[in-house]
Amino acid sequence: MLGGLMQSLFRGGKPARERRRLPAAGRCPDVGKKICRRNMVMTVTDPMQPDLWDWLVLMGWRESSAKPERRRYTRLPETAMKTLIYTDRADREGVYRELIGGL
Image (cartoon, rainbow, N blue to C red; front, side, top):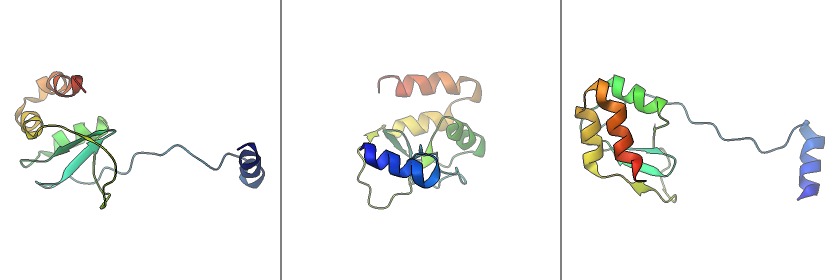
């Protein structure tokens, strides 16, 4: 272990491993697509407004892009996405905290 660290420091002046960054957000996902954050995943059930997607991106959500999905996610119920889509903008954060609070 120590040898590998010394070798990577010698090569580039910094450790070879860097923290992963969030992928770029992209546009609003289409209905039926999955979005994920850390260990949670939701399916987009209804068309989403761009302001909701921008807000979800700020919260760390991204469209799942891995094709052979091997990660283990906690699936949020489909009603979670419907609830977020139809919640008023002013109440969104409180509703969101209730939805993911038990996870």
